[in-house]
Structure formats: structure tokens, C-alpha cells
Image (tube, rainbow, N blue to C red; front, side, top):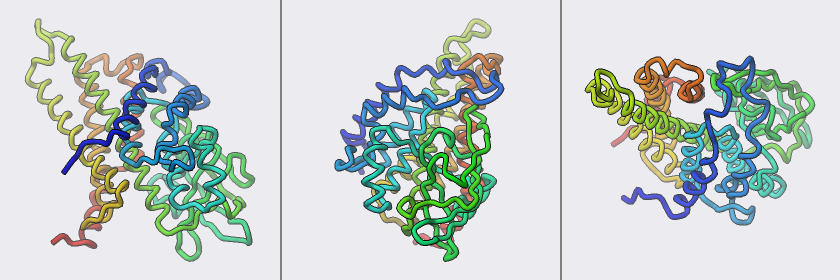
Length: 377
């Protein structure tokens, strides 16, 4: 099998490295040093540069000004963004736009896609349910009333909720069907309550009370939410991978310069073994993430549905990123606990990603259910 990336995918990654090269993660205040969010808004200047580099339209078809690429290309770009802790809704907006393209009606796609690819419209997704521990599609109910849908319920920890133009909300109908409603910012019947991530970013608890959404902004298509949910999860694994790679690189650089007893600590066996274990974590995170991204991109058949590969990627990402930042803090010694050190922000972001992915045990249970339902051999 050929595991190399295509020329187009490599070009997207190279363009992303060029755009993110100017981002300095240590220039943003640490979440421990500010009373609220680290900033009122996401990095609009960076967002504009991403749009100029055609990185917001990667997944869009040519008719909407896009490159027609796939989830693998998106994950390559996300990996680069995480290395500098880029403060942009890149994953949420690109994934939501891809879902609209794949499942939305012609009126919605014509109105939204080209503008989103140019960075003029920003989307985010409510994917954490009422508490963060229950399925997102069960947290909101939807019923149709003529040419509008009426939504009621609560979604917690919505990223970029105060800044996005549209929030994609999964909602359950009385017929036990999941629809995706695009809720505009400032929509009557839709309120926000401030929440904060461990990374210091501002989240929003979205409260829907008889919010009336025009039917053209509601996607009622079988499998739309499941596809979007798996793309979001795989993209989050790509973020964890990029962050982990940067943190291990920082640790390697520090350990090669920090001396004890007249020798760099990197030469000590205990340090080398810990670093090697974290390298193994990274490689496992990478292999499982690309497998999941490939399955989503290709719709490739297999003994298990793509959700099985996504579950495996989430297991490695949630456990791996935690182990990597913990080892990094340990090997940095006192510097690892200093909130003025950039490593502190990476640790805070890693914890946010780990919480967003959910506990590995839950994904192992889901994988077990899949194996029971799809016996191999």
C-alpha cells in the first residue's frame, strides 16, 4: 500500500506551515494569568491569512472556489495549527462547511459555501450535549411547524459560540431522527452563557427556548450528524498529534541543553526511556489518526464502520496527549510549572483536547460494542 500523501495534500500542509510560521504561541497570555478569557475574539488577522492562502476552502468543490480535497488534507493543516496553538475555529468551521456541502440543500449551499471558503462566514458546532457526557443529538429537540423548525434544549461548551456567525446544532425529532440546524448569532430564543476552557478560550452554553429556524437552514439527511461528528473527532485527534509533536520537540531541545552533574540530562537513561515512550505514543497517535481520516475521506469499506477507526484514534489521542505533556512537565522540572513558560499553555490546551475527546475507557467500550455487532472473520 502507498501511504504517501498526494501532491495536493502536501501543498496544503506546506501552505499551512507558511501561514502559521508567524504565529507566536507565547505571545498570548497564559490562562492562569488572566481573570477571564485570554482574548475577546479569535485571531481574525490569522483567519484572513488562512482565507488568502485558500486553506478555509480546502474541502469545498471547485464550483464554490475550493480545492476539492479531503479529510486527510484538513488533518494535515490542523496538525500544523496545533503546533502554534492557533486561535482560530479552523476545525469547527471547515467541518461544518463540509457537512453542509455533503448534505445541505441547493439553496443553503449556494448561499453559504463560497462565502465560508473566503472566510466571510464563520461556523462552529455544538457537539458536547447538555453536560459534556451525553450524546449531543439528544440535548436539543426539534419539531417542524410549517416552513420553520422549533428548537428547545441546551448545548454546553460550544467553541467560538460568541464569535461564529452560525452554530450547527444537532437536534432530535419526535420520529427519532437527527437534524442539523444552523442557528444564526443573535437568533431570537437562542441565548448564551459564558464558559471557559482549560486553554483559557471562551466557550458558550447555548440555551434554546422555542428558537424558530427557517427550514432552509435545517439539514434533514440520514447520516449527516454521524459523518460530521466523526470528522470533528478525527480533526481533534490531528490537533492532539500536532500539539504532542511540538511539546516533545520542546522537551528534546531542553533536555539536550539542561545539564546535571556535568552532562545533558538527555544522556541519562531514565530521561531517554521516558522520551522514547512518548515518541511511541506519537507514532501510534499518528497511525490511528491517519487511518480514521482515510476511512472518512474514502468512505472505504471494511469489517467495521469508520466509527471503529475513529474510536481507536480517540483512545490513543486522549491518552497519548496527556502522557506527552505530563512527561514534558516532569522533564522540564521547575520550568514546567512556571506559567510564564510556553509549555504551560501547551499543557492547558492538551487538557482541553483530552476533555473534548472524552475518556479512553468510553471509546474502548464503544469499540467493544462495534466488534460485538460486526464480528470479524
